[in-house]
Amino acid sequence: MPERLETERLTLTPWADVPIATSQALVTERGEGRPTEADIAGRLQLQRDRYASDGFALYALRPKPDDAVIGYCGLVVGRSTPAEPELAYELFRDAHGRGFATEAAAAVVHAAAATGRERLWATVRTWNAPSFRVLDKLGFDRDHTTTDERGEIVWCVLALRPARLSGSCCSG
Image (cartoon, rainbow, N blue to C red; front, side, top):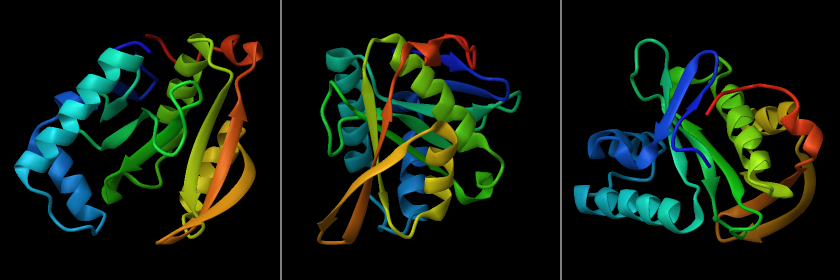
């Protein structure tokens, strides 16, 4: 995956390079407590290591021309594998509802297809209707459901076909 992606409205740069306070604020906003700076620094280092080993990670989303980070989108191993990674995205609440997640995810899907990967996954909690709308727009299909200690998880899958490469949604 390229180190940087561009869309009509967004610049996507490595999430691992965002200030610790930005990453800390996003985790805090999601309601899972406030992680320490050391914890966030460790998570960001894992992102750098993942990019070095597998060539993919999360991107910070920066609307043009303002450049403030509004969230992330990218590929993670998550519950899947490096060969068939998961698409992941999360935005600060004040960036919701403006199509940024869909735009960024489309760019990431396009870049993933260019790597030769054949499938991507996304896992979503059953309550997360906005994430299902993003995945529906991208052509993901619901595949199966699993359960963990926090409840049901819907696994969505996207077959990456060569036709996906014919359109130009973004530039590397």
